[in-house]
Length: 309
Image (cartoon, rainbow, N blue to C red; front, side):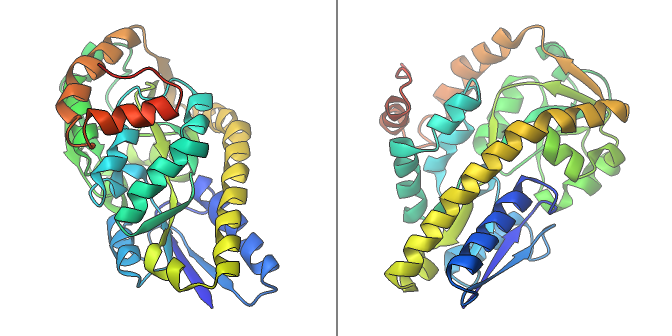
C-alpha cells in the first residue's frame, strides 16, 4: 500500500515535520509494506482541492489549515473564533483528550479523520505598508484570508478589508499588490519566503492560533485492517508531539532570522480592544455558523474554559 499525502507548505515548515515524522513511523512499523509519499508546496493542488479529494477517497490524506476545512464542516469553525486560545498551553489542551474527540467527531461527519494537530503558532498579521500597533492601524489595509466566514468577520471587526484568496495564490497576490498583507506564524512566514512578497512588517496579534490538521480520508481509513488503523492513529500522535517540540524550539529562531533580514516586528498597544471587538461582534455573529452556542459551550467546557454567554 502507498499512502499519498498532500501539503500546501514547503518541506522546511511544520507540515514537513509532521509529514516526515509520520512517514518514518509508518514505514518502520510496517517494515516498508506501507509506503508514504509526501507532496509539498501544493504540488497536488491547493488545500481545498486536496481536501475535496480526501473527502472522496481519491487522495488518502492531506495537511491543511483549519480555516480551509471549515467549508467542509462548519462546526470546526469553533477553532477559528478569535481569541479562543490565549497561549500555547490552552491550544494543546484544546487539541488533546476530550476536546480532540469532540473535534474529530465533527471531522468524521464530513469524511475526514484527524490524525495530527499541527501546531504552527499564532497567525501574526503581516503587511507591506506600515507597522500595526493599534486597531486603528488596520484601516485601509487589504488582507488575504482563507475562505472562512469567521476570519472574514474578524478582519472586518478589526477594521481591515479581508479578501478570500486560495493559499496557492497567496504569494503572487502579495507580490503583485492585490492585497497588502496576510497572517502566519514565524516558521511558516520564513518557509514561504514572504519577505520576497513585500511583507515588511509583522504584528504579534494573538487573535487566532493556526492549526493545520493532518486528515485522512475516512473512506480510506475504514478499508484498512484494524492493525494498520491503530498504527496510523499512533503515527499521528507521534507526529503531533514532534511538531509541538519543533514549534517550541524553532519559532524564536525564525523570528530572530526575519528581524535580521529587516522585517519590523511590532507588539500591540491595545490588544484588549481587539478582544472586545472579537467577543462583542464576531462571536455573536458567527455563533450559529459554527454549530450554535450549545456546541461552542460543550467544547469550551471540555477545554476547562468558562461558557460563553
